[in-house]
Amino acid sequence: MQIMKWEPFGGLATLRREMDRLFDSFTDREPGQAAANGHWTPRFDLVESKDSIVIKADLPGMEEKDISVSISGDSLLIKGERKIEKEEKEKQYHRIERSFGSFQRMVSLPATVDAGKIEAKYNKGVLEVRLPKKPEAKPKEIPVTVGK
Image (cartoon, rainbow, N blue to C red; front, side, top):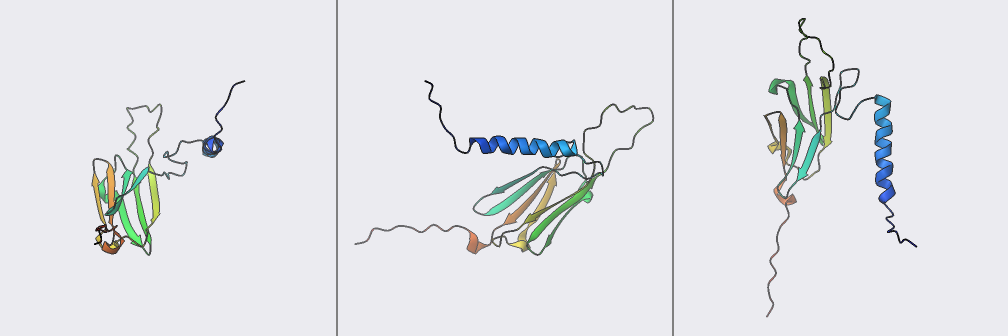
């Protein structure tokens, strides 16, 4: 008799992959690709440290003037548009997989973010938005002393 290890949540990961594949089949596109109406969703990384939260977005081929970062209430809005290259008459396109069109992503800001000190930089196709934490939100070390 073979003994198998039972993983109660192992099936959830499989279910998630199947659901993602099902929804992608409805749109007939991969995540990050442009939809028929010219909208697409750039890939984001969200990283938190003790001092800040950093959002990195892959926006290759875009110019700084085509990217907008704004705050509204407790939300950060990143939007922009990647323009399609002009089709040249001498070239015959066989396949276009790069995404073009407009996008927007909204990120909810936690109360710990100091909205007045947010910085956004764009370099080599990557937008980096740094959201510093308020001083009172940063973790504090409490020294342990030996009592006498």
